[in-house]
Picture 1 (cartoon, rainbow, N blue to C red):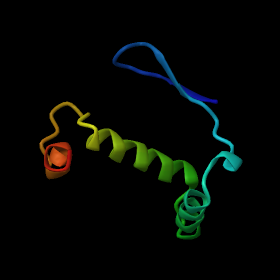
Picture 2 (cartoon, rainbow, N blue to C red):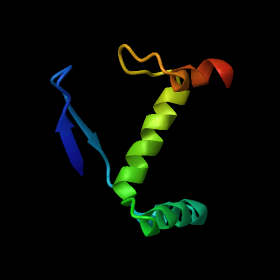
Picture 3 (cartoon, rainbow, N blue to C red):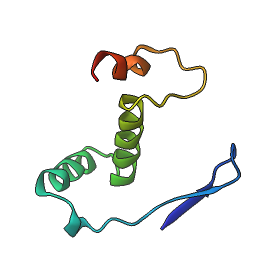
Length: 75
């Protein structure tokens, strides 16, 4: 399990390990396709988590880019 201390809160944040057998075939194919283009699965997962957070309305402090308004445009 990966864990890092959050410098803002002091809490340790951790993501559980996810077995590939628990993922649907399209998800595995997506991770494999990105890996074949040089992007490790860990980087792909981090990018997807970041995008999901933005879509859900969570933004970095001071963020004013257009992608930070995604939730308002697509509820």
